[in-house]
Length: 432
View 1 (tube, rainbow, N blue to C red):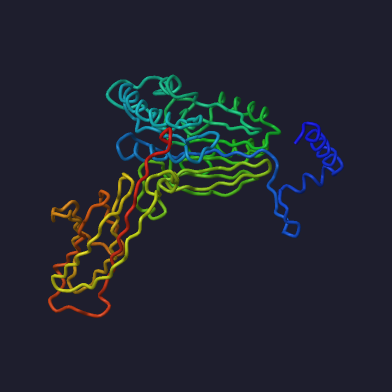
View 2 (cartoon, one colour):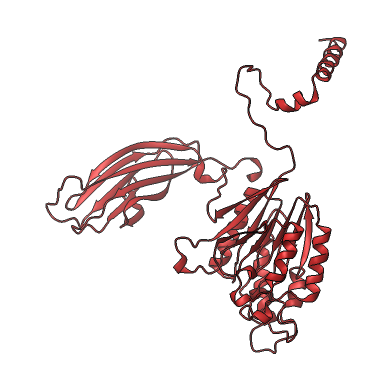
């Protein structure tokens, strides 16, 4: 095609586009040559984004840090613009050396976030403990030096985010306590700052407030929130997020302000709350005129690049029936997997009854009869036994049930075994 013809076509296209009313062009939205198809609804053209709120971590240690580290990985997959927490990142209640060690451990995990994160101080982050004399402000200077301001605000995409400090203590005595109403008040200084910040935020698409102690619940927190809430409502605050109680709860809407309490993202779970008590975080999706909040249970977000979702090779299913000293031999031969690592997954459906059946022994043997994996199963439902295997290799899967009553051949006392072989391909370029 000559340059002249090409220029004519391009000019013709822009002329035709100019003749179409702007409203019609915007209303179309979907590009298709299907003239009789149903018109699809288009999303709001305004800016949208999301942020995540983490709950109490409370203390360092393998369990807590493991939960937090897993959460950081999941949040990176979700890709919010920013992350907040509602306080109690560490166990605290120690001297400066203990505080520094705990904070270093937690910060190393939190700094694994791919996006900026913003802390909110909690009582575990601030309160002093140990044999040394209690300094003025307790761990407040440590916190501001190594973590961040005690209270502050940030702006992002037309929204304001305000972090408040709930553990200043009694303005008269300086006593810090989350169970003494006199110590659960916003100081004059912080109150003046909040009033000034809310005025600056006037006209924002949304204002979100974060505080550790959920003072709006009253009781041990006294009545100070009755002074603060009208300020928030008048300023058009959209939502307030708190923690401390290790309890997930939506506390309703008051004068247009939505109140949320988070439970734990690694902290201690009150077993009396089970099964409703579980480690979680919130994802807030913000639109110009509204926002939505979703609770995400830690462990519920997966990377599609994870090895567990890689290519499968299916092997046939076999059924078995429980009997006295029953042993099932299931022979398999792994195929050519182009040099990839294989994982044999054996799914055993086992029914335990009142006749003495206590469980099954599952073994995987190599071609010489040597055991490469052994596992005892005593649970109901489907249990997956996982065993790494090599390609082009023969294996024997043995299912051995030796405790069923002699002569017990009751109909219906059956189970099934299914075997799957998974091949793990190498990681893509760049290790992604």
